[in-house]
Image 1 (cartoon, rainbow, N blue to C red):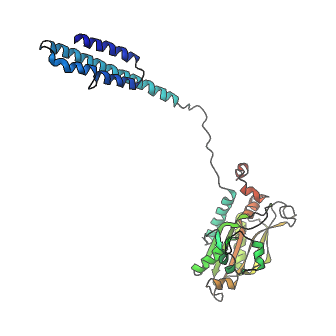
Image 2 (image 1 turned 90 degrees about the vertical axis):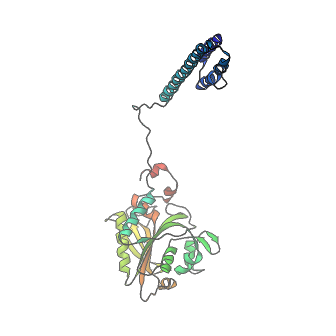
Length: 339
């Protein structure tokens, strides 16, 4: 049995030298020191030894077991260190190298100016109203005093989902929804996407943004509208902005007006951007038509109000001197980074 123990130690040492992984070491532990291992088998047979041999063989067996256990643990620790050092080396960061530049996004020019406009009107006491892009014919046209077959529908030919369901051509439907559910005084703006069957050119697009404004209260006059619009125009373009108001017609306002800003591209001389006129229309508005107030359950004998609608794209074009509306939707990063 003494010879067996010596042989086990000798063979185990050779196997340990050849072991190249933690798994291989664990296999050796099981092979020699496990419940069914070679060393354990010898220890179980010690009952057949004489009383004189048993202590000697037991001491030798314990010595072999302790030797193998220590050798396996030591070699495992060495392998673990080698693996750890290799991992640290592979993950090492050279702090002297320049880091990777993190690109930070910025607001789209439309969003930027819309935020500025919103801040300005909130400072005047307005609230924000938002509504659906898909509207009924009633809210998009009829409630705004544009009945079926009215010629005003020709200029707002829309994308129809069904006979009486359209993609909204303006955010004015939100004015009706607000007046139906809110008692005066009312001060709201309704920003959002609108859709019209327009041909694409430098100043027109079938998809664009509009900001509708509405004020309803006792004693509201055209002077209130003009003063509000002048304040808003100057808040966007600066105090030296040149603008003009001229009479116009909208079915849902009476009297009505349009506001133009002197062309930012030619300074009023006439060019392709302003189509030779020297002015660019930026908004329309007027006093809310009495019939529209009645449609919403508001007595026009007691209350009056004004409304206006601004094309956000044209507002931004004038702000930054952009001469083509298509640039807003082409996702050219070089263009967008300028803002």
